[in-house]
Image 1: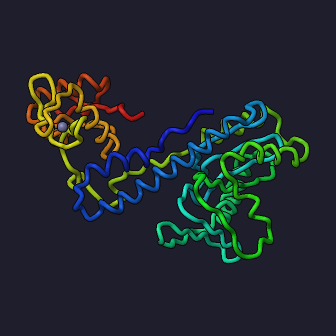
Image 2 (image 1 turned 90 degrees about the vertical axis):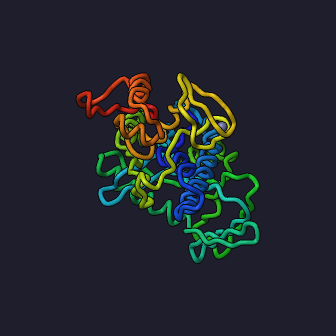
Length: 321
Ligand SMILES: [Zn+2]
């Protein structure tokens, strides 16, 4: 099991925010999305650390799944396949004081004297369970009990519950450090194996194959076009846009830093924000570069594949894999 990579959407948001002018009307909306993704990623990797201790012979762990149940896509932070059960993990990384209102199905959070209300994670995993059941039926996988835990990743978060706990939900709110022992407890309480090791492997392969990460255009999502973006090559040292191309390097007029390959970050941004294909003209306007010849040299150096004839050639970017 590996510590998960950032999702495509997370990388896109990281590329997008610096390329929006701070006065742009979408800036704070994009920033709040990015903050949420960063916190989510941090929480998930924290949980991953403790999941590594589970026996790889008994359990198969899958991260960041996005599956289609026949009606809608659904997303699962982590899924554990065990011989006699399946476990869904919903990972929250919220700071402050959390109150799970078990009677009214909401999650209240107090942080820096501000109160926010979030959707009830228990309703969320309940629906995920339904969706996963539909999905498993469609792929003719054996009927298996599906359990779920809510993981509160931040150790400094205070957790409380209120309302009557009719369904013993409280026991399913777990700190990452308890993951190992709670999974083992579930295993000990579960009945005889439903899945053979081969069936678990087969299910894992099917889940991985059917996983469809979110790939929609981030610009479209925020109702932006390339015209909203700050153009130019960003200084790799002071992070200001506007590096100038000199004979064999990029030069930053702000901090006088020199770089040979600052344009690679620019092309990476282009790939994340606009698409995998770029023409000489598109590169020159995105990087604020005037020389067609220099653009051609730089693109040929980093792109091994292209499509089309010389005049309207599109270089295939493969910087973000
Ligand atoms: Zn600089």
